[in-house]
Structure formats: structure tokens, C-alpha cells
Image (cartoon, rainbow, N blue to C red; front, side, top):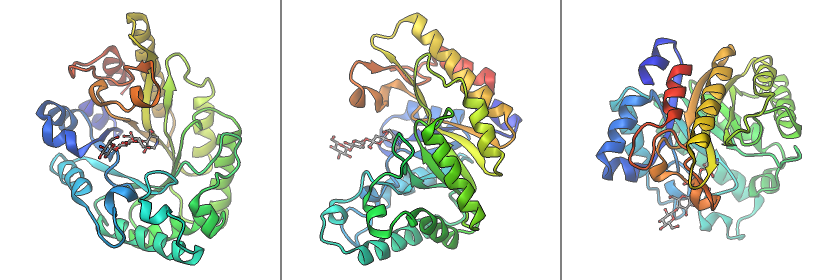
Length: 311
Ligand code: G3I
């Protein structure tokens, strides 16, 4: 997969967990050989990097950055501003809006600054929208107002002028209220001179349900002059997985990759973990799973062949 992607100037990525890199040599071997981009699955989130106020723990993030650099891989930083996986000292309710604003600025400056020149792209703001396209209520919107997005992007650019800055969300793969809201936001950010380089379509899909308007939707964004990446692709199936579903799943992976790569400006496809052995899906969607391209035994599934062929 990696060779196929590199040959055409594309990126094929995976989310990685530092704990598995350390404990599972077979996982680490595949992670280093099959992908030319990596995203820390949890290690760069605020609760991980600053579990107590002013006390930083970069061990997980550093482990993945070091691994990626040793293997010549691009790093997607994930994620600076989100409403989830925040440390409890931050969400406890005792901080004023002015303090929260200051803390967010420091967080972005500290984390982006630490990895300046090493992280190629950042998911600066993650999942800002509700399903109907309204802006999600969050600690950040509450403290800074809707302008928190522009503010975060501006602070990120100041901390690393060379990193590509992304907004990332789920259920924006097809044309709909949520993706249209993202499109309008990107348009207005650009019109106001706010730094924004791209949009991440997460791509947490159900087998057989690749949105028919994916390609059209990618074109709406690239038409605004921003890049699109598929940032968290997985395709969940009902358990136990049937051969028919795994075959449909392979078609879905291939289709997403082809439709991305067909567009000028969609040059990266990242899977959200490459192996069913460690997937987040069964914990979050009971009865569903087998969403990744390698199985529990780390054997390539039909989806791995389909992705490689698409690349
Ligand atoms: O680290 C603790 C561990 O100390 C504890 O013993 C254990 C017990 O539950 O939990 C561990 O934390 C878990 C963490 O993953 C690390 O494994 C959390 O419970 C669990 O909720 C957390 O789930 C992550 C989830 O984000 C949280 O929202 C998933 O691994 C991760 O794949 C998922 O990733 C998100 C993206 O960041 C954004 N887009 C959606 C995507 C899927 O939800």
C-alpha cells in the first residue's frame, strides 16, 4: 500500500496507538511498512498531554512522532480543539471565559510549537458541527463565541507557519446540511483571511453506505481552494462478519479511495486504526465491528487489497 501511494504522490495513513507500538511488534511492523502517514489516535488530545494543569505528559505523542520520523512518515496532529477528551481540571466549571480563552491559546501555542516543523498537518478544530449544520455548543463556543474556530486557526498558524491547518468532522462525506455548513464556514474563513488549508472527512461508514455524493462533495471543497483528506476511514459491519459483508466492505474502501484520488486536492486517505484487533468500533457500536483492513490476527482482509488496488 505504501509503495503504491508513494508512487503516485499520495498519502495512505493510519491512526496509531503508542501502547500497541510498544507492546505488539507485528502491529509496529505493519504500521511502519504499509503507511506513509500516521495520526496519533489519542496521544495528542488535551487530556493526554496535560492531565493536570501545567503538568505535561508528552510520552505518548513523542513515541508516535519518533516512530513516524524513523519511518519517514508524515504526521497528522490530532487534535487541538475538541469538546471531548478534555482534562477534568479544565471542564470542572471553575474557569472564567477569559481564563479558558487564555488556556486555549497556550495549549495551541505549546503543542503546535513543540512539534513545529515535524507535524505536517493539524486537525485544529475537531467536530464543530451538529448534524443539522448548526454550530455545536461546547466549552469553546461558550467561552469564546463562534469565533473560537477562526481564533484557533490563527493561533495554530502563528505557532507553526508551515503546518497545514484542517477542520475535521464526521458525517460530512456526502452533500447535506452538515457538509454545507462546513463548506460555508470554510468560505467565510477564507473570505476573512483566516488561515485554513483543508477539511478532513472522517469517514466512519457503515458497510454499503458510501454516500453517493462523495465525489461531488469533495469537489465543492476543492473548488474553494482547500484540500480534502479522508482522515478516519473505517467501514463497520454487523458481527459476526459474513464473507459477503467483507466483500462489500472491500468495495467501499476501494470506492472511497478512488473517489478521493480522482479529485485534484484530495491526496490522503487515513484509516482509523488498521487492524480489527484494536478497533474502537465494537466498544462504541455494540454488535458492529470488523471495520478495519487487517483482521484480529493482523492478516490483510479483502479491504486491504481493494485499498492497495485503488492506490
Ligand atoms: O486511557 C484510558 C485507560 O487509562 C482506561 O483504563 C480505559 C478504560 O476505559 O480507558 C482509556 O481511555 C480510552 C481511550 O480511548 C484510550 O484507549 C477511553 O476510555 C476511550 O473512550 C477512548 O476512545 C477514543 C475515542 O476517540 C474517545 O472519544 C478512541 O480510542 C478513539 O479512536 C476515538 O477517536 C475519535 C477521534 O478522535 C475523532 N473522531 C471520532 C473518533 C472515533 O470516536
